[in-house]
Image (cartoon, rainbow, N blue to C red):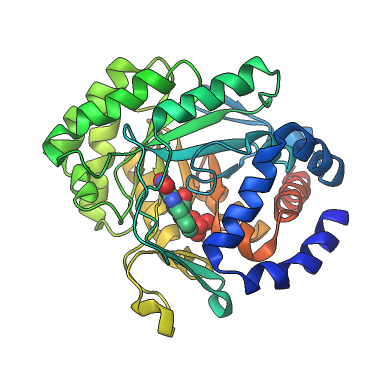
Length: 345
Ligand SMILES: Cc1cc2nc3c(=O)[nH]c(=O)nc-3n(C[C@H](O)[C@H](O)[C@H](O)COP(=O)(O)O)c2cc1C
């Protein structure tokens, strides 16, 4: 209630700000005093009901609702995400080299469609800086009681042929600090990155990462792969020892008409749902119970989260809906899923 009321009051003000400034203001504020922020949010949010506890491969989650990569790229506010009721959190994408990303503006809201377009371009402080922050959080006793994963990508300066070394640098820095790693080969804003989804590039990359990592490795795929390419990528992931698949990232297509659709970048949010749902279904079919699938794309309601779980997802993630629906969305989803599991039981 309190969280919702605060959000209703602050949303119009935040939406007056440029989207990236609003984002920096929120994540920066939560990150300045992470444990204090988490205590305040924890007092206002509801903890997930015990019946929501589930597993994704070896990971134990208290809820199947996770924070998708990109919102907290540098892991600034991890305790706050746990306090909101998320069952797991994915920070990143980080890259071996710190980088500024693309010129601003690079993040656009389409409020009428509850959608975002972004071409951030992996702006991040680098995997060494993330490792230092994670270590400090662990040593301070502020580490949350939920799995925290790190999503890793390729630095822009690194040629595609040397991508594996770039990923491996991040693996060796982060491996002992996180509960899982996600190999991101699907963001549309680093030139050439999505080519890493092709079998001849994906297989050696995932094999190298899985061999070097002591935690479960996931791979995150794009919704713009056709069904046959998606099936092939899943096959490669399974053969390479991946612990699971995350489907999907943002799309290069434009599922709605809006003047802002002219902006280059990945599209996410409510209108991504039909495409994401179809791709998740195809990934689950291809995985055929060999590895778990985490569904992501356009999840903004209990019905959509439940629909992905009913398809066979082990868990779901979200990003854009948090911007439009506010932080109490996580409690609402947890509450609604618990109620529907009670009815089903
Ligand atoms: C501004 C923004 C930045 C993102 N950055 C990343 C990223 O760094 N790495 C990544 O794997 N996905 C990133 N994503 C994609 C999300 O994790 C998610 O896959 C996608 O937005 C679809 O989910 P949604 O509709 O719930 O937002 C980003 C999304 C947005 C909106």
